[in-house]
Image (cartoon, rainbow, N blue to C red; front, side, top):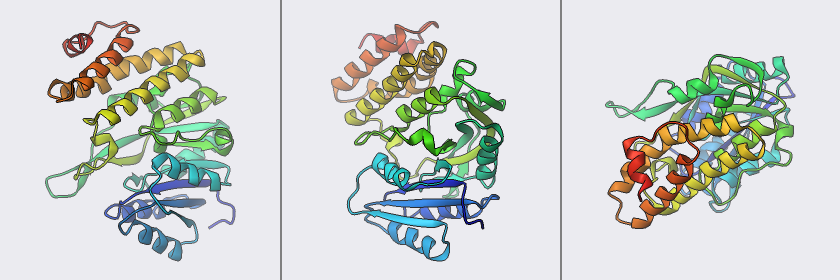
Length: 312
């Protein structure tokens, strides 16, 4: 192990005792070893903090921070960012799994190219019939963003990269975060930060390698699995719209158009299904207003579901 790690991995966790060991083990299994990790226990009420402490006791690459109370995923990530001193920064949520060659491929790529950011592919870990989790395939929008490999590209050259908006599929130079933090008190905080990284990077790289398996929890406690709540919908819409606004402000019209197409085809249809039977008419009204704002920018004809939402 080298005395000067190249990469800090920020690992936030709240009440993830069932998954935290697997996330930590996936870091230990990396084929490249010059990394350090900040494990941020966001006020957990279960054994998450103890699991983090046990990791640090046996491996000096792990450092633990405890929040006295839950502050949210953005605050936990920001705590890790404030402590990072390495040239590069990455993220791993404590209920996900990093693939063994992720650090090798991500850091190796950005070191070779000199870019400010590198993004890889990811897949979902879904509950299976055996009571465990099985990885799915790389979804089309992820493949469009990350395949084929591209070195030193930009959103002008590769607008579909804007569809890869998760924090934990990327490694970036620490300087990219000098004036950037995740927005506090909001869910879907990745959206805005990702687009700001893309638009401010001098250049970025993409690789088709799957670098993370993203867990869809069997118990349905992940925020991404609770879009039937009106406050969650509002945060989701604000994040999607905010990301598009960043692309517009930076002058990346093709990337903004790509995001609009992707949101209408991927994000909106499941929300429409929820809205159809939702007991609160405000859910339909607010979703309908958002869909109308997107449709006004769309080139392709609206689907039948979108046509219905346009009338809400």
